[in-house]
Image (cartoon, rainbow, N blue to C red; front, side, top):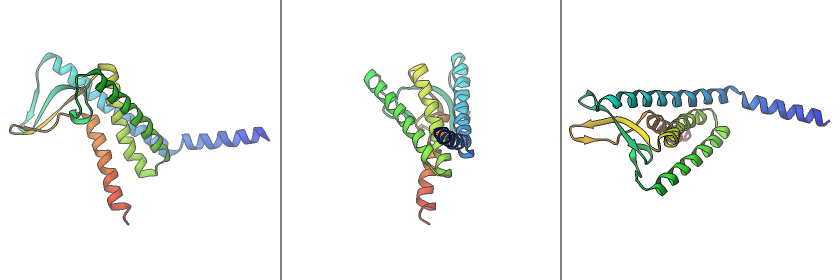
Length: 171
């Protein structure tokens, strides 16, 4: 009897872990993480040899090392702020993983975008003790916060969740 129960638990676990939704989430997380890493490695290598890269009148690629969170918010030189922020990001990643496990299909996709970006930025915080941001959008002398690919995916995931909750869940 114990063997049959073990086999049923094992089968349920296998079905849940290898479901299409979980595999899709892992693919999205991996795609976001790799896209972010590749873009950062390219810009870091480029900027070691030169200064900012002028793309057009509204976009420059200029490497900035960010010790804060997305878009340079809470950037501080103090170690306590940096380590506290890094620890908080780690716990957010753990919580996002839990939410993805419990979420419906659409939320799972949107949360996977956020998790992939968060993992990319956490990786940099652990490797470089800062996150390389490099996308500088501006109009004349007004510059938006400098950001990276991970920040884009995090923002898109959050916007999609908000739009879904405001529009789809109202119906």
